[in-house]
Image 1 (cartoon, one colour):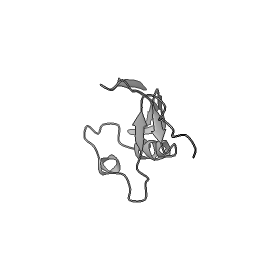
Image 2: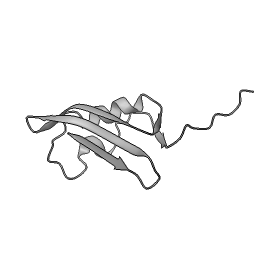
Image 3: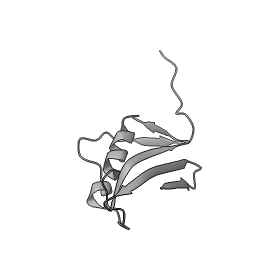
Length: 85
């Protein structure tokens, strides 16, 4: 399956996945956004992988990040970097 969502702020989020035994499988997330830290995308994909296909509400898997997960931020364009001192 393939889905695209354009946020009001202009970020495009694309999700591709299969459904096996009623659960999401082979989840891939991409788009025109930047995520910091970059490894946060692994956590997002991990929360979606094996999630029930029919869930219409946020499950406990996606309602909050695990305590050990780093905070993440999304950007529609690259974050501004401060010049090195």
